[in-house]
Length: 520
Image (cartoon, rainbow, N blue to C red; front, side, top):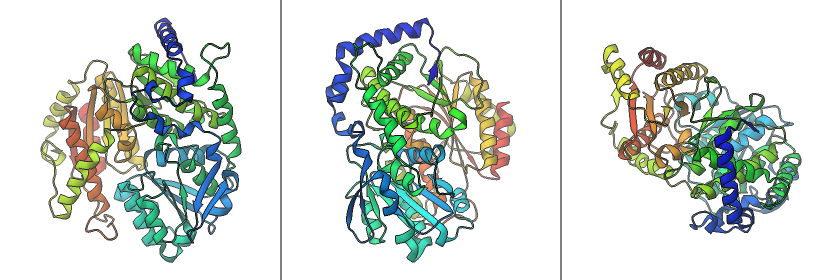
């Protein structure tokens, strides 16, 4: 990792270094002392420090037999029929780490890999288009086992796989969860997660290693790198050799102190998955109370310097080491900034409201919230004024978010990137693009739980004519996606956030072009 530091940042780092030494931080972190943070149960979420333990995983096979095995030999227990496409059903930490390993590491299996972390019916239809159930592999991953998106997608895929499910599917979850029960009923093998490892810290546990085994990835180089980094992070604070995890944590805390709280992340060798993984780890762990460290995917944005910006070049050369270092650094920064980096209290808020909208939709009530602007009802002049007024509320040291509850097609991405750049030009500040509902499980915590410095533009659209029905429910995926958007909107409004919601009730590309033109 590379980062440029000026004199003020260097001074802030040294101040935080003295504080860390006074706290005896490294020793207390390794001893799992919850009082190093907020003394609210942090010690219950530090299982990721036991880097030797992830090498041994527990599998419940289709017959219900418990098998303990080394990660290096896990592939044999998870072997199914040959496949040419793998669908990973998971949200946030249950999917981002696995996708990173699959993309970045050498694998023996030559197959398409698709992460289905959405309820968008267009994306779901595209992921299933032309799929032969006899050559499909499905991995459902949810730590809690009750994640809405994963549960619904798993039911859909079990329905598609039929009798092939016990051979072609796999579940990863904590023991005793709803997902384990459903998988066992369907005869699908289960790999257990570790109860003391949270989702975004789970890449070096079952949630990363089991999908890697399915891909034929040798985990030993990855785990060896993590062990080397863990040894380096054991170094005392007053030793001659630096502690790489502590040094990165000091940088994060000092950047916050200096007001350089926008972390522009540059992908290593085009590996955008590394940016996405770090983004969730930082935003969901540290975006709470009066603390904000906003990760920004730097690709395609201006390289001009800004007083609230710090550029970080990510490195995957020794991926296992980098993963452990970022996790350790996040724990260090959380302690220095006075937050619990292992909870996500504000992620649940929109889930509760979403469930209410889902029930209303089942009863036939579309339930569009008051304040949502329907694009077909707005003239060009009114749209110009609406966006201009909204952008004018951009706060000091703020950031802007384009939240798109839309299909992540290549064309939509191009248009939304153009819209994002337009917002960045108009505000002059950091601007991020998130696709709903997946971003709710990552950077969404900072939106609702961090300081009120965000400017939000939420975009939704009508479900397509070929909306995908949910097996066993009088509901479609498109309706659930809208319910999630409305839940997100309601909570942002309730918390006094600056939010403008625009519903594209027509052709999506046309609607996006109208918004781009209005910003220009």
